[in-house]
Every structure is written in structure tokens, then in C-alpha cells.
Amino acid sequence: MRQLTSNGLPISVDRAFFKPLRDSTPLLSDPDALRRRFHDDGYLHLRDVVDPDEVRALRADYFSRFDPAYLRPGTEPACGVFSGQVPPDIPPHGWPGHPAHGFARSAGFTRFVEDPTLLHLAETLLGGPATLLPRRIVRHFHQGSGSATRAHIDFDYLDGGSDRLVTMWISLGDCSVDTGGLVYLEGSHRLSREQLMPLREVTDRPDDPRPISHDLVWVATRLGRRWMHTTSRAGDITLHNPRLIHASLDVAGDVMRLSTDLRFVRRDDHVDNRWTAPWSGDDGN
Ligand SMILES: O=C(O)CCC(=O)C(=O)O
Image 1 (cartoon, rainbow, N blue to C red):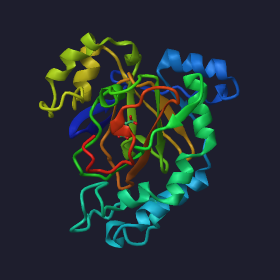
Image 2: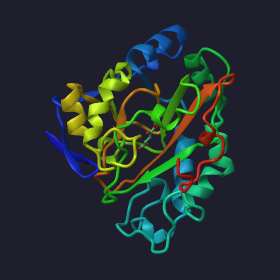
Image 3: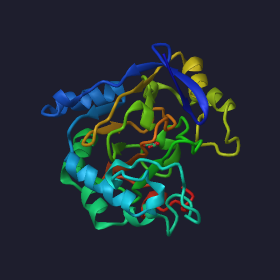
Image 4: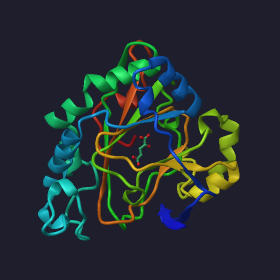
């Protein structure tokens, strides 16, 4: 039984709390089956959808933007191995001047996220013409940062617009359970708002009504549901429903987690205006 943490709290990666994410890659050639699976499971994990070499090149570009002291000596930027030293004077993640801010606006990243294959997949799930929202988040975690993504549903961050939304999570590099990937709570897209309310009693952010809880054991136990996880490889993508509860594990090894999360909406729908400008770490959204 492996003991990992999320937001610093221990969670055992065993059958009491975890089960594997289902691989839906074999359905890629069958749009109806893909839609049904997305409806039933609330997510789709798909292997080898994007070019793994392009993913590795983006990872190399991102980590090359940092002071080399941030990376373990003798390792390539594409590996993204943490030296244990955060460069002094670096702005907070994603703020102007931080490497993630420039990377999110770079031609390479923009070309990658605007790949017609990704849009086509979103359109398949949304059942019509769709658009990728301009707020495209770049996330990066290293071991010991003490922070991970709290359990939440995306719609609580996008509720100023239509809920006909699809989120696409793409790891920019391989992402094992030690690399702090996303975990999804089984069947939670079917829960009502009333069922989620009591979970918010245990939170390290009492003044923020959006996250559900930082305590993944509490959430799983209270709802009697397990978290689902998988090892993502460069080239894989995961899509999820805006009401599916998800969170992340802390990074437990030297390899840093780099990922992006994208939101697609139906082109004719009203969009939450917090998501109509490029992402910046200080945008408060
Ligand atoms: O990557 C993360 O840690 C969070 C991403 C997320 O919440 C999402 O894709 O909706």
C-alpha cells in the first residue's frame, strides 16, 4: 500500500480509496460510443492523441525558460527534474515575469492547444461547433511545494456562462502517480449541489466558496466513492465533465509536473467573461 499526500494530507493508494481510470482510446473511431462513455463516466482518458515529441519539445521549452539552477545538474530541461532549489526573486507562478506567463503566450504552446484534433474531439462531445476559451492554464508543481489542486468541480469556476463545457487536461510529459497527476471521484458528476454542500465543512480555504475540500480522504469517505487515477504518458489527454469532482496529488518525486487545462464551449453559448482573456497567474480567477 503506497502512502502519498494531497495538500500535505496522507492518502493511501489502495483499493479503499483508489481505482484505475478507464482507458477509452478504443472508442476514438466511434463518436456515438465516445459520447455515451463521456456521459456515463463523466470523463474520457485517451492515449496517444497528440504527438508525444511535440509534448516533450514544449516541456523542454518551458523548463529552459528557468534559471538552470532550478534543474538538477546534468539533466536535460525536457526531463524537468527539480534540483531542490527554487530560484530566488522569481515572481509567483504565472504572474507577469514568471516563465509560465510567457510560455502560455508563446507561438509553440498556442499552436499546440489550437490543434484541430483537440477541437474536433470537444465538438464530438459537445454535439456541435465549439470554441477553445482564451484562458488556457499552465500548471507546474514540484516536490515540497505543499500545494496541490483541491477537490472541486469546474463549473464553480465558470458559472457565469453556459454549463455545456468540456475540460481537457493534458500532461506536458509523462505523469505517474508520483508526479502529482489529477484524480477524479467516481460517478461524482451525478451528485447534486445539496450532496456536495456538507463536504465544504472541511476546507483550508473557508473564505473561498469554490473549492470543495483539500482533504481527499474526507471527500472519498463521506461520499463512499473512490478516486480514480492513471499514469499518463506524453501524448495522452483526459477530458472531463464540468461537474465531475477532481483534485490532484502532491508531487512525490524529483520529476516536476507540468500540464495545461483547456476549456471548450459550444460556439453559440454564453461564455463566463472571466475566461475570455489569456490566463495570468494574477488574474484572480
Ligand atoms: O492540473 C490541475 O492540478 C488542476 C486542473 C483542473 O482542475 C482541471 O483541469 O479542471
